[in-house]
Image (cartoon, rainbow over all chains, first blue to last red; front, side, top):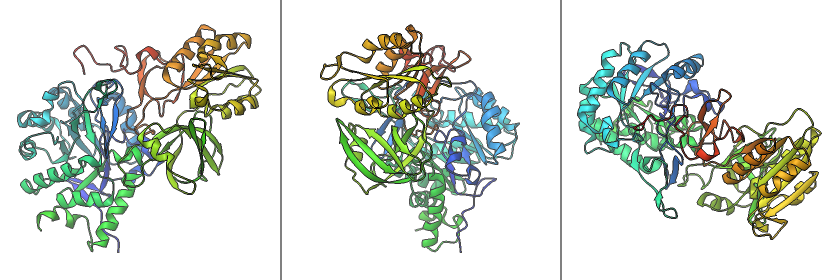
Length: 308
Length: 275
């Protein structure tokens, strides 16, 4: 008997437990040569902004032990081109789509949500309030419970859609549970966690930071225990809050840790860069991991590590 | 795709890797392969990209690499019979001429890896093919004998004069273009060399195509790491991905002086005050 891997994030039913992670699969199209994108839980798009954006200067990447730093800086085509090209492709290919949005300010998040609430093919919204690759690190919305809540309230006020709104949280905070509480009070249907951690690599031959943007976001298996810890803490405080977990998941075994900590589904990110078939492989492996432990469904394992 | 190593052998300062690659069909010159390094569960997550040296469709794939970093050093420790994970072919290859025109191939160091394949394709189309190969020193040259077997002429340059003409490839390129009335220049090598080749080509009335070398994370177009400023057909500069929009670009379209920056007139460039 095969294990039931279907799951949900609020009102959104997912046919599979693995999604792509924002920023790690563009808008899904490039992965189509490695698997049927419509069979993934969902594609979470690279964060889209109102205007086209070039991103930062290169070098944009530095490999680190079991991870990497990136300072892409939200390169993207802007919402208009996104709707016309990327979302159109996702719809045409029957891909469950969670659109990640990023704004320079609160109003821009609201404007993006207002536009996306009116179009077909948006199955969920991930509000990226935690991208570290912006000029003013101090203004990352997710680092402050008040500004995090402001963004979510603004999005919520224009989001006349049943599709769930998720807030993407940063682990670079004193107390992630406090931030989670503030976005829940502001009306999110769930949270995505974790975004990358801010890091730096220095080139000691040139005696300067290696990345063009100086700092970058650390991702990959190196941050996995941080993600598991953060999910565990938030699930303990808010046991009914749907969590989309991500942070260095490389195998089905890793994914099972996230589910046991309290995630209902997982996004596969950095590992896709080295293994583009990973989102499909990890879903299969997760099924095997559950089966070998005698579980019949993924849903019965969500948060199970809190009960032992 | 899992590929068994058929052989790995030194060639000058480089290593020549021959892989069993039954799943790989036609490879065009300029295509690249992305190789996973470090083994399953290892600490290096990102593939290493190499231009494809040769291939026999449905049978083998060959690459040339230099063991100069942690990943390539690991690759150098592999031996015949070991299995490595490869994605290939990737990228946009060199565009070949429809007419039998006169062409120059220019390469620096192991940038010559894809050039024998290219020379054969060009000769097969009736093109004249003159070759300029350069390197810092003799041991860092690659492909000289193989290209001599295909091309109409081969000129070698080395920075230290240990082989051929002392100097750079661009010291002799203008003469080669003018003497042979070359219309197209194909180049692969370090970025400063490509920049110089693109300029000399343009100054001498030849059209150039350059296979760029930019550090990549994914190689398949999803990560936006390997970008450089390239002018599009519409005249607009975009931060283009060298993995899927390249690695071969028209030499007159790459904004060489602005590589590693975002030009202020690029599509979506930061407004004053930053993004």
